[in-house]
Image (cartoon, rainbow, N blue to C red; front, side, top):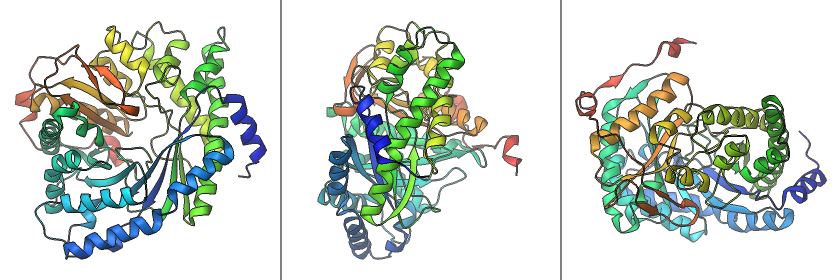
Length: 453
């Protein structure tokens, strides 16, 4: 698809006051050729590959941002799953590997590096277990490393044992970063149907089917969509959908141009454009505010799930027409602390954990940046995770959990995480027990639709 730069510049000028940005450009790197049974050699090869491919990333994106007047908020790298790359290195902890990743990210001046990851929807290898046990130390002692794990898929079902184990890991990570409101948990996502080309943290990693190196881009633009809807107060629902589709097309065209130019400058493969609307803790840059502009008094009120479904479907349709290569999560995120409108709705009682769970049946990700009481039990935490995994598996979509038990905080208290992570009240959690259910262990079989080959 030919893209006329003048068309993109016209779009940028038209929406420059509506907080359009490129939320992330993520350089995806395959590290499988770095595998080595010797830890020192493994670390050197990982460091060398990240710094070799990423040495021009920061300057390249600064150049493109100035050229087109479009802010690029985060510069990131995603690597192959470390549980695979480090499997032949027989060590008790992968923390040294994570330290190497962190050092390399600092060297090339990027914001985050993902790939401290493992996939075990059917069962865990020895290497998977080592990685899982390393997560609390890694997320509490490194600055830039992010972690993701996939414990469920429509083809394989849900690994119930993994849900319980990950709940314990989340609690330990929270305690290890208690002085920062458990912020380590903000760098860990538990997935079902994890995408292999996602540019957004904490879930970004380079899947086995990906190129040696590629550029994946995550666009944003909730403010653009909100303003477009605001200009059409009398529009019908189908007319609203058409409006969102048209503006999503324009947003994605801008992202497509940046992605292609970045890939050309860095001499790597062009990857995907993730169409997701990514909010921030800034007024006017909120998915919740879009829903309210559509006619919902407060996000979370009846009708919110349908409004979100309209929004996401239209975003996908508009974006798919604008880019020849879409992927990642693509839709809209509904994080609590990162979206000022969502945080307000929690504070005034319009949104509960249960309503958020319902909305995740149509959103891009799932229960994202959810502050929870610090004394939540491991069993309840695991049950929240497995509920979200079930939504993803049954609906054949990606869902995830980024849950943050905040040490010393109770329902209604506020937790602040800083920067794009924002702040939000602690959500209420049911006091009813699921302990006997989650402790049964085992694996939930895949649904009948898994036989749809």
